[in-house]
Image (cartoon, rainbow, N blue to C red; front, side, top):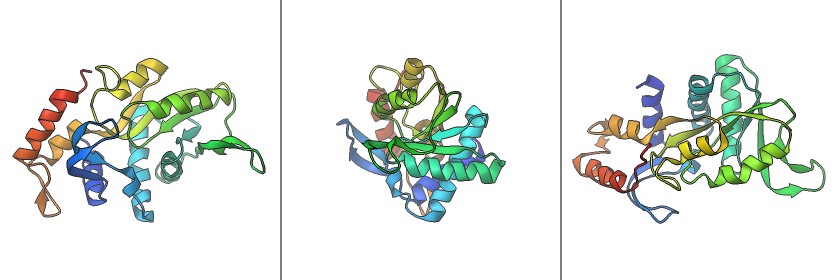
Length: 225
């Protein structure tokens, strides 16, 4: 596993974004872990987060694109922080864009926030985590309505590696449905492998008991592909 992925796993834990215990997800599933990207709240955390996303985007898609699109609301700070990181790390200037939840009819009008999109723009979409693909269902038509744009890919911070609407993961379902590649900074399989038996901040987060709970969860909800 790449060093930056290991660093990102520890970063999620230290920031209180990735937690282990007993959680009920929006889907109703009982999960032994939970990720809340809303826990990134400081300037230094957002700076680091943008750098991790920038590295993952470069590794997965390269930098031959024009716009980072982050769906409202959580995608807004992600796209801003990552655009800044790409500029700093790679000297590449990309624009950021997002959508508004409601169309603005005065001043800076329209549904787009940040950069407008035009024919020929190559877009990378950025999100925190995708479990059902619902946000893409909402935002993909918005992107397509702005012009003849090409979506180069979607990147999330954590691939939960669990079933979406069918037997495949939500990320793979999105890729097959919309025809663009998907990627993550890390997958939950990588997280489990790295943290199992490892002490972080004075405690072992995934011990034998928790590992068994994670295995049981994936027996029920793990993606087949």
